[in-house]
Image 1 (cartoon, rainbow, N blue to C red):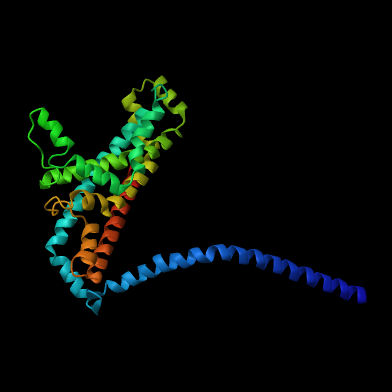
Image 2: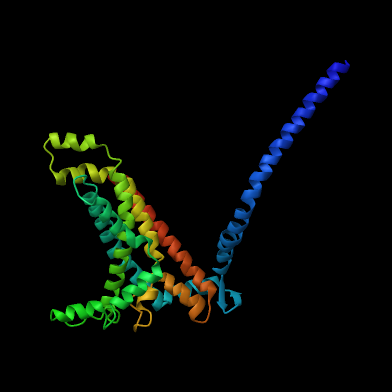
Length: 307
């Protein structure tokens, strides 16, 4: 009987020791997780819920009052909102298709194993993606200034200087060119990774069946890259709707910004330039979120129907 009790005590002791060791491991894990959870809660979760509250408020500085319908009425009648929405949509509808098309073309060309110096070309095209947004924006502003290197160069061949930073049409062209230079190589890397995962035997079989380069591109390459095309389209859409750095840094101080101000710039102005109205700024932020969600759903449905 005594041996039985002793054995039972040993079992209980081992169980308690195992639980203690387990709790120690769990405690170590939580010790690493808690700081991250704290900052995520402080800087992500709480601001999300607070922004939901701000949507119902009409603010003048730090003084706010409940006025949700007033924000909606103001949004419907806001001429400047319609203008910045139009600007953002123009950047989206023009820049994103061109950028993704160029990225795909570069990826196909640079995936050719017979091309010499492929690594150099890949690095050169991707390198703009790792440059500072502010630094390259300032560089573009200097190059395209009225007396900058671009206008000086075209003057030598008899073309009148172009108002890259002052004319509304050319301001938009400038932003689109800057975005293409910055992000085409970034998307090209995704397409390159997808191309390198396509089975080479598929191209060999198509060639044996008499398919030309154009047919293999549209019948093999594009279908195999559809998931990556969808991913880059969604990410580029979200990025364009959040566009801020290029219009703010390139066009600011060069005259009117009405033709290039984006939704994100307008939110910044509502919060920190005009008399602060954080409630109305929060409403426009949720407009961006809704538009991004709708465009993403449309892109997913288009890909699903094609499939």
